[in-house]
Amino acid sequence: MTKKRKIRPDIIRNQITSLIIYEKVKTTLSKAKVLKSKIEDIFTKTQKNDLNSFRYLSGYLYHPKAALKMKDILIPSYIKDKNIIRIAKLLSRGGDKAPQALVYLIKTEPKVVEAVKTNQKKKKSLK
Image (cartoon, rainbow, N blue to C red):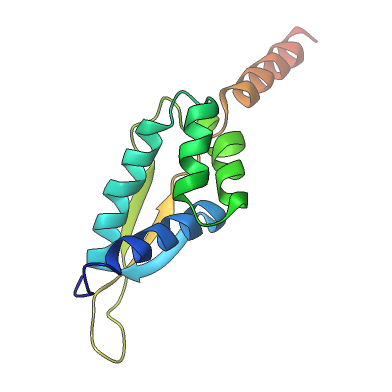
């Protein structure tokens, strides 16, 4: 990343907020690598999913909708997984030939939904 030192953290925070809201972001490869390490740090800091972690998220992320989504949806579903985020390389950008990447969250279902599905399978097998 060849931006000024003061601008870099804001760019990363903005992309993290967009990644949480939309669950995928298209960016350059160098920004994607930084984004992956930062989002993994955020997930490890907020694994307890308590008031302190929500306050940390609210202060770090730019949009309150992102903090609520992280607290209610993403943290419970990704709590045990180590692989949270993935980087897929894309074709180079047309103008300056910068390598592009797609950063996206790996879909996992919450553990509650899995328990409901197993109960439904047991009911079907008993009939």
